[in-house]
Image 1 (cartoon, rainbow, N blue to C red):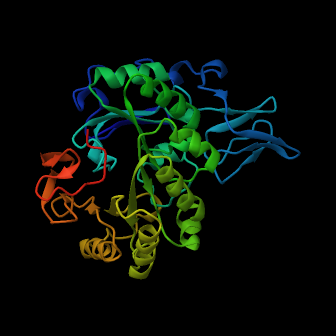
Image 2: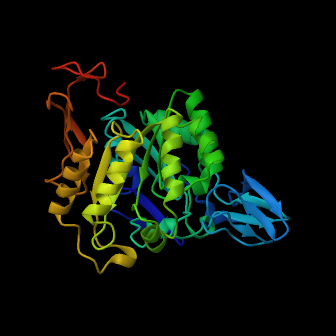
Length: 377
């Protein structure tokens, strides 16, 4: 489903704008903050997880652990030091708002066929060469055109648009942590679920706090080599692996996406090592999505991922014992249906982001009775 984004004060339409997509009842926050931008109206709030050091204020949200002096902005483009305190610049000022099918996140075992009210602010704590949303992820909230949408209003709009959940997505929720956390807290009180679409690059203490209000997450596991993580995304692998364990141990429903990038993350031995680690660390029942890469941003010289590579990755994953394996981003040729790992019966049939048939009854296969892991109702 299309979304409407704003960048550098200029409206960019992608297929259809927000007001025309998914039956949204109204455009939220018709006044754009940048039209009335000032220091007092910048979305700034005191940041959580900070510590003073002799060299400046340290942000403890993610493994970057930026140390900033007065006026300096963090690597995620979202945190700034004023008067010796760290502030978030991303609060109540999303640059992208949309109603999405849950399958777009992608989450296949969490409320299939439902809708998610999706929000994002500018900024990200990684710098992926292949980022598909780089126009918002690699800039600052004071350089995008933003909606006026405080947490209470996000929940109201989600309910108004018959969304069973709010998704923090498109850019990186960790970079707008305070906004996501407060919104998720209000959503939970209102009976609305919370979905985190993230790179998993977050420190343990903030993540455990976020998990207290999160219901489901899809984490991008971008590579299984430290050197590739650094060169492709500017981050590290190990913190992401630790984040996966925290999500799992906190009871948040978890699915994993691996983008197969030609010449970067397409080596069978690396895919096998990743799947073996997942299998041995308690993730056999957590769906894994192998996604097709298309030329974009700083890797626009590469070809799209060959479909046979994705199919081979899926075979490797199944051979390592992963029970729910999907391929995506290949219209007409993706493995998107949910099968019972016991008897092989097709339980959910999907066409693109649309659920055509759902035969999971009470969380079990209707044929053999085997439990199908997920959150179905």
